[in-house]
Image (tube, rainbow, N blue to C red; front, side):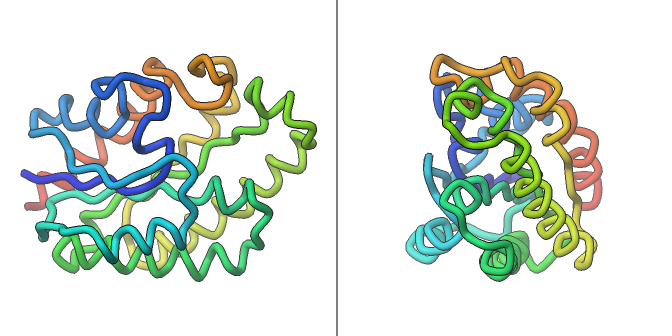
Length: 194
């Protein structure tokens, strides 16, 4: 069984050991090989799309996860542009899952504004939260319109703002464990559909 995880710093697990990345923890809980991960800290939707265009994939994957958008929001891009970029990535994820949308899991964008980094950034936490909510409303609407799975980790990020690594921004291994636990039941159902 094969698993591909694409995204940004949250998918690559900036600041944590490889074993603590949530896709790796998820694969371990599923009892499958380590996932193929295409992600980099700082990537926006268009940067991820460019990387995917160059990457040598080996489809079809039994499971594909997509988590992207925080850097679009951080850079002040509007939601309409994010929607368009996210839709392109989602279509590509579906294609990589063998044209099976039910084999794709979209993960919501966590709220970085509640972290120490966010509090020290000079940006208003309430405004960051509003923008993250708009981005997540967009990615949830698009995901659910094509009947794929969606997991909300944003609420958890707001409940545990101090579960971060030394940079005060990125989640720690314990936070990622909670994410993987939330995603696990859906991932198991996906594998049962093989």
